[in-house]
Image 1 (cartoon, rainbow, N blue to C red):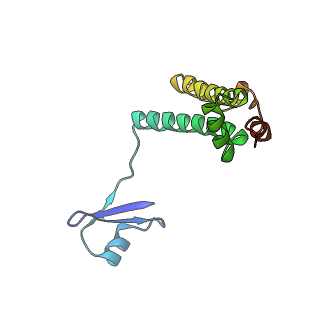
Image 2 (image 1 turned 45 degrees about the vertical axis):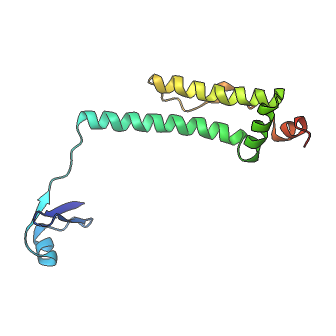
Image 3 (image 1 turned 180 degrees about the vertical axis):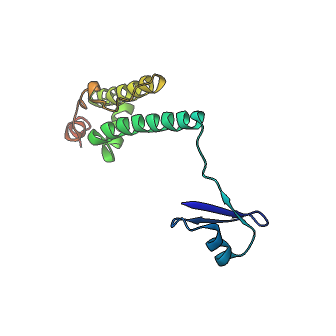
Length: 134
């Protein structure tokens, strides 16, 4: 993609067909210059890679938790925690273990997005409902 800018008014044209400056001037008028493509620095590449690593870690932790407990189950857990129900407290501890693992991996250089080492959610939604008398 070529990128052109007219300095007088900062009007920019990005052309995905990679046409030349003559086409831009003929189409949009005089005063345009071709803007060279940005070449990222080593620091910019490192920041982008680290951001991508952390995003992937977060997504892995979130997806693992969400696959077992989401929506109304979160509400059940919250009610059970407030009332001291053991199964709900166990699910809360399991969720905390996932996110403790996430933060440990985030602090290091891990690219392992598999959180199955935390184990499965200890109780199902029907078990939580039964514990709460629902």
